Length: 530
Ligand SMILES: [Zn+2]
Image (cartoon, rainbow, N blue to C red; front, side):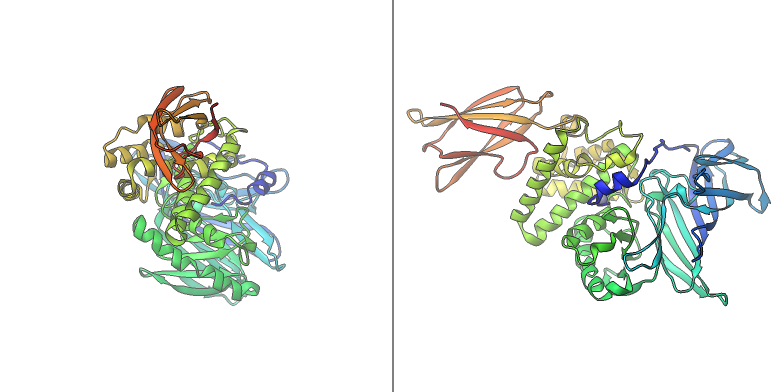
């Protein structure tokens, strides 16, 4: 997702409670959600048919679902069936608990009938033109406000949505549309089916009055734009750039995992939300500058986050750091290295500023009480910078080989930071333990005091580099010596608190530049020693 609207998000959401995977004992195989929507009130009626495989013998099933609260929002379960028979159940504030037994290895189908006004997760609201719309917004674990599910990124399942709504609406969802039927009572049924297993965070429906455009195909993948009819002309034109972005990812990373790509104008609370093959963009994305970067970010997630997903929330940088850096790499190809360097420098400034406020590593296990806190520059910009430094360390050829190997290995499943490390170590045949430890598990980055002095008699410059931050880092530091018409670049290995190096140099430099090629995440103060 794109956190452009992060400040807004934080103030809007009361809190998003995390819980580690509630159900390591079970593995959802398939969800079939039938949802009825209407124009007179915000009550939704749902029937969830959930196919579950069991890893252990169980005496009950605990699925995530927000219960109806005092304010009247939340879901009330009215009936649960196993096969065709009613079975007993309970609800607590966050779960439906089904009274059933199953044996290890068994697969069972449960049907849960429920209704209520969604407290979150499905946004029912008028759009900027005053028309009623329904847009789901499930990240990170808000799906269970309106869908009974195992609401964790590590449990992926194929999914179908069968939406019955007043006939003036059009419905978009994951996968392919397999049915659309008008009923005599002015209702319409729309059925979408996704065969590729998805975590709940990227399952989605969008229900609104839409204008829909086929923008073209990329490698037989149709690309569509779904926008509000009032925004049709500029929306179709602007969103169609997606078909120019998609090929870059296919060429650089690997095959696209899904059967279509729809870009949808929506009421998502985020700038963009990467829902699998059905990306939602904020309402005012039509007409906004920066749409190409936003689309490049969300399209990157189709590989990183959606297909190869993080194993748990502390590894969210495997989604957001990747989407951030892939967007910069796309820019480098399209707009050149200067544009790329500027974007990396901006991100570096953001990381440094954030590290002054919050002393946490990228792999952050302390934000469990509010997952929205993970939408911070550590996950995005610093995660991106870690990939950039891996690229500089390994070189472009090995970097891309490792990226492609990582994707090929974890497409369709989940990976942790350690899984990524192992791929990069295998491909590069380097031990990356120290690199991962300092950049991903240690807060902050090097803060360097750099002093230099030229000795005309010896024709050399002496450089003194002192690490001012708490934990010492190990890295190569490039120094550029500029003498008016040319720059000589030398690399110095830094490991200790203080490094002093004498470098032969025929002419006195007028200026020295630390990290002239934008390769290191660090902050610096440079002074000439007298
Ligand atoms: Zn993102």
